[in-house]
Image 1 (spheres, rainbow, N blue to C red):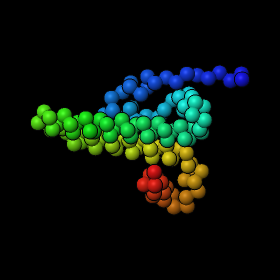
Image 2: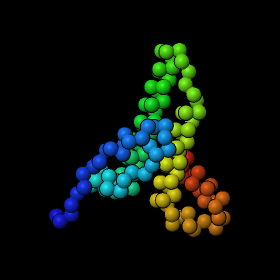
Image 3: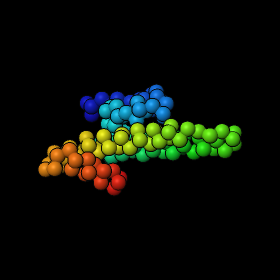
Length: 125
């Protein structure tokens, strides 16, 4: 085939700490395409794989914080975990909004109906 495959660049996965908003930024398009072609899935499914990876990383990080708190008798700031969880939820909602733009555009109730629909889709995810 004449199509040139760009290799997967995992640098973006470790570029930012999990506590930063940037950690939950979009996956580079070439990485979505690479994973999709490697696994023989769609880029939409590749996006879901990315989100599942980020969720697994988030859960492992939270467990590590809790384990360290128990062994060192130190407490962690709960707002740090809440902020990371919020950033994850926002990443998923941005993805839903992007992938279901046509359905959102058909909402007669404006932004409030769109927000309700995004919330419903998020809960289903």
